[in-house]
Length: 299
Image 1 (cartoon, rainbow, N blue to C red):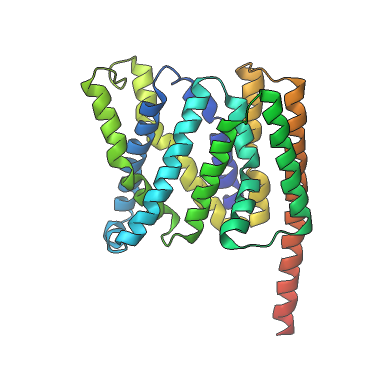
Image 2: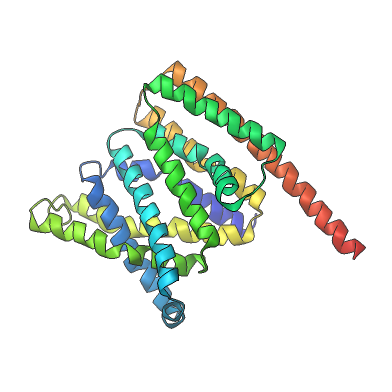
């Protein structure tokens, strides 16, 4: 097993067990926890950049346009992180898992809308099944699954921005967190001034967990960047379902969240869509790879 696959498995596994970590912080306001993630992540990734002696090259690459692009990316990331932390804190882990189950399908739709990509026949089937699943869950819950949709679309749009953004993954991450560092720090300072700050004012355990949010956030991102460079896209496409699957089972069996039979029908439609999506993608990329090899031989 190559290092890329191992790195990817660890990244998706860490993300999968995130609910346990952030559930332990459920007594902390979600805005503060999210702000700590941003602040500590920025500090940590900045240290990594400096240790790699890339600070100068990073600063030289900055322009107002690039900074603006990554401010949008950072804002979407903050929305995603904040929604996730809040959802876990109120016991909606199963809904967060749904968001990351449908995220790949949302990404496909965004590619069609913004990048004018063409959907293949079976991809239309996938989109249709996912849509039916979400509609069914809307009636089942009595309202659209806003948490799931917010997570799926914020991360899907974030991925879209990253696709067209010019910087590498490491430099991109430091710029994203840098553009939202000041607002995040302002949230923490305001909480300190009005006496509602948690860091250093709660138990040592909670303060340590808040201080480690940077490591918990950055480590899987770095592992994922290693995996993305060394693992075929089809393998990444399959491995990515580790995260919501782990979260789903944690929500059901560890946090004892309510999961009605009617919810299962909606989830099943989305799971079927993902199975078809994975198989179709694997076959398509396998054929494309074989065709490229034949073209090289013919040349």
